[in-house]
Length: 160
Image 1 (cartoon, rainbow, N blue to C red):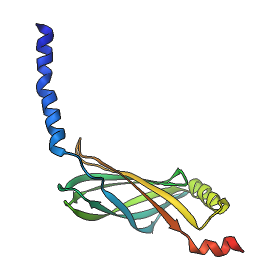
Image 2 (spheres, one colour):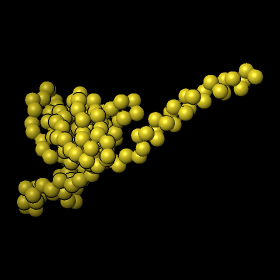
Image 3 (cartoon, rainbow, N blue to C red):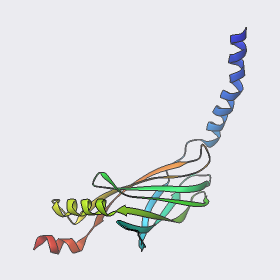
Image 4 (cartoon, helix red, strand yellow):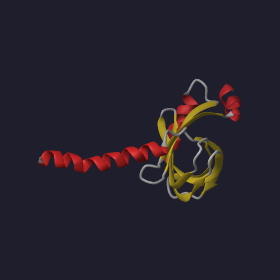
């Protein structure tokens, strides 16, 4: 009898959790593109930049956010990270441009520059942008965006 009572106590909690998950429904992933990078003042052995991101919401409901985290990976390792405590809403079927300060350590910058110089094609750099747009307990949205940077100035330097 006591065991049955304990089981019955958990039924409303399970139903509530299941109901919340069906209300949210599946979401399409947000699309994130880097639209600009501006220099910021750094300290010591770091490089700081302001990264501007265009975040597009292809869903039927707006996304309320409270904070954003970024990690840039270049050639398979983390190159830069950034955080912002920005608060706002990405409208349904809409977009916003967010600014996030990012930091690159001088050691990582040197390591990547050396790796790019030694690579077979120093004019092309593949990158991965990963991150999380913070929301409520069940509302955080993770994203990943891949791209390629082309450095035309390096072609003349490496070819001579």
